Length: 232
Figure 1 (cartoon, rainbow, N blue to C red):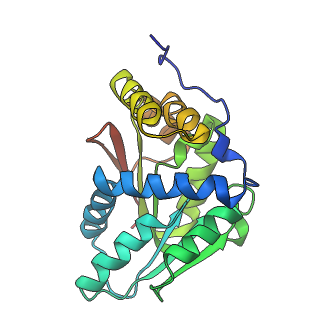
Figure 2: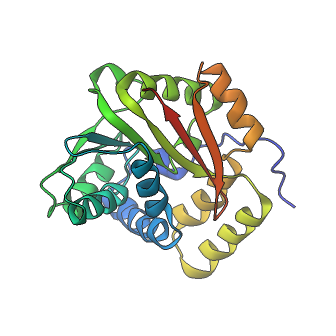
């Protein structure tokens, strides 16, 4: 069996910000469908309700990828007559371009190309920051810095969902990516994402290193952690 006792830090193919749109677009489209199918969008919306979110709030999705989470939030907010300002942030130009096209029908969604570690000083403040299946892309040191940057950039709090490193999830994703796609990126990055993911004790230790103590960490199906950090 694959050793999942400790986090892996091998680079994913998608970590190359200069990948052409032809390679990135199919993967982003697939991730959006998976997030919708397995409840990723609903979990974020449920967490937003608990803050509670109000008309006029600004929400930013760090590592927004194809913009699917913001589109889901925009649809929910529209149905509930909530006027929200939504901003996606991603370091990859191909991802931002994909998201811009996907979000073309939503006037309250905009995007910023920025590296959330190196360009943190260029990122404005938001009421709430969300992030889905993104933080596992960082090694432990950069993960701590990411959380510090998020905390400095939010007025209310942070909602993060990311993978639980577990053998069931690893082999499920391996089977799915090898059975249903020929994408080299999907076949490599899918299982590797699980190897780079977290166990609860690791997240608790990382949060301590980041100086964060006002948080709630819960397990969500399918094999995801939901981290809610409150600032006020």
